[in-house]
Length: 333
Image 1 (cartoon, rainbow, N blue to C red):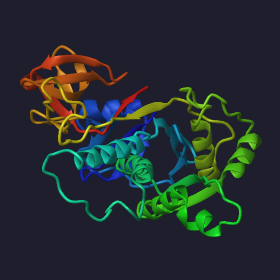
Image 2: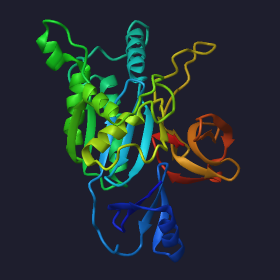
Image 3: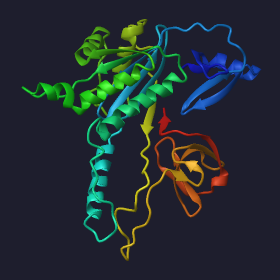
Image 4: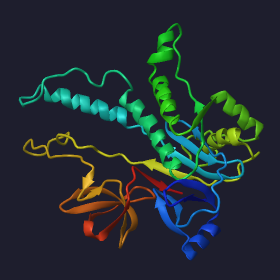
């Protein structure tokens, strides 16, 4: 494993070995910090050189799991397997049904307006591709990335419907939007799925048929192949360690809970603040150690494990928690 390095102005430099990073920290030449699950160092002195090698990120999109690999010609710095954002479509459907239901109750409500959601990217499609883009922004801040290589997935075509195949498929529209935004971060290259398979076979690598397994051969093998195709340097993977990234689902503030309690009372529901902390923030607790913030109730907040997301306590006092950083996802190895 290599340690990402940034200078005093937060500009990423080439990663270094852990042993060298320890020497820098011990001598005061660098300050350690965590960037949302990744250990990094910040140089306190001017670096001896600023030579940057080409670094590529291989991206393997998927419906349930996705993979990212950060690689140069000499080293594979990081392999990431992440869960896709899959809950937005059902959330939008529930919101629409509740809004329509309120219009038939004897309660003050606004008049139906023009459908402002109609047109552009579908919310579920945009959420999927925005998640990939956020991860690319995150990696760009700690690695001097120059190129992105994406496996170009295609939507199911419909015979005789050229306009659907070109313009109307949500996947195709979302993909084009993602490529446009990714060009702002670096050069973008694409390979078709069959080209990725040919490269995988040429290197003698096999892909696991169990797509939900947390193994290198499930998805990271493709992201590694994509990055290695661009920068070269290896015949077989030199680093198979993975960082698992799981996006957090935040329940935005709603008008009230979906189901009323006794007496037809609907309590307030949702929100992204917990007594001064943004939900998802990494905090350090005297008893539970490193964890992230969940909900809040009666002047206490919930703390959750970064490993499996399980709730550790509901009765943590905000004064006992030291804020570290904000994150919209949790990480584990």
